[in-house]
Every structure is written in structure tokens, then in C-alpha cells.
Length: 249
Image (cartoon, rainbow, N blue to C red; front, top):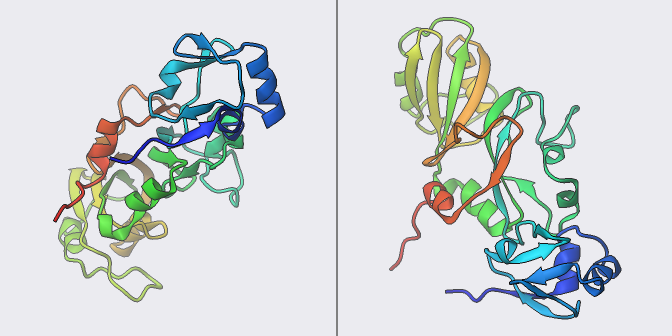
């Protein structure tokens, strides 16, 4: 088991966006930082950074933000982008302003386009991010698709074959699973993340996606009580639903 890292208190809080090192020192000297009910008096103190630190430390009487190693699920609304390169409001604006100053920075785990809603993961843990998006992980993503025209009836077979070529590409898609829900709606589960993949798959079979919502990553489903624009930290149990078990020799 890896040992929990330690950081100087002033560096920890500065990296979490609570202010400059000097501003954090002033917080500490004013008696506004407590740990396990005890007031911390020295900004040089080294703090063991555990996952439960936000349950044990208070800043100005309020729980500490999730410490480094933060991982979130967010219900991305329509019209919000995942990239600074696109026009419009951005997903990071849904988080507390202080979190935008964190170091390491919070990043989205993959992207959803502006007109796609649903389950989006975010983290400041680069190792976790790469474990999830790595093609070798083969993590599935399920989308609820609404279509402009009725399904033909052969789409599930075409998508499952692993031979479908998207326009402008030189290698076929991996097999995907489609479950028809009605004449004009379906679940589509894919393990890749090519550019606008779901929309292009249905375009390849002569249809047009009018609404797209991701409701599942791996075995983690978007909670019904998580409203658009809301987020919550991922638990160890949540992560276990996303990541495949580590194989041991």
C-alpha cells in the first residue's frame, strides 16, 4: 500500500486555491485553520494528505475542499463546453471559483461536446485520468440517443460487426452495442472516443442524432438525483465501478 504524501500546510492550502502562501499563513496565524478539532498554529506544519482530510480540517469553520487526488462526477448541461477553444460557458465555471486556481489543475476525463449532456468525470490526478481514457482499459460509455428518423432495423448488427468505417478515417470502429428503445431512440455503448463518434455512426447509417446524453461510464451510472450543473466527489466504490480490477501475477 502506498504511503500518503505529506505537504507543508501553507503549500497544501495555496495549491488548493485558498490564496498565496502569505495569505494562507495569515489564515493560520489568525486561528482559522483546525485539524481534528485542534487549531493549527504553524503554517510550516507538515500535513498527511489523506482522502478523509476534508472531513477533518476546517478553514474559517467550513470543511476543507477535497484534497489533491480529487475526482468528481458532474452532470454536464447542454450548451456548456469542455474546451476553452469553443465559444460559450465552460464546465469549469460550474465549480467553485477557488478550484480554478488549484495546482495540479482539474481536467475533464475526456470530453462531451457542447450539445451533449450527461455524465462527465473530472480529476486533478493525471494517473487516474490516463487509466480511464487509455484504450487498453476498454472502459465502456453508454449514450441515450434520440434520432430524427425511425431506425431501419439493421443498425445493431452493423455497429456490432466491428467493420463500420467513418467518413475520413482509415480504420474501422471497434464493435459497439445498440439497444433500441423505440423507433427513434436507443442506447449505444461504445469503448472508443473518436471525434463526434456517436453522431457520425448514425450518420453512416443514414440517420441524424437530435439529442445525445451520456448516462453511464463503465458500471457507474449518472445518479438520478444529480441535476444538470451539479457535481459530487467520486467515492472509492464509484471508482471501482469505472476501472477494471488490476490484474496480479
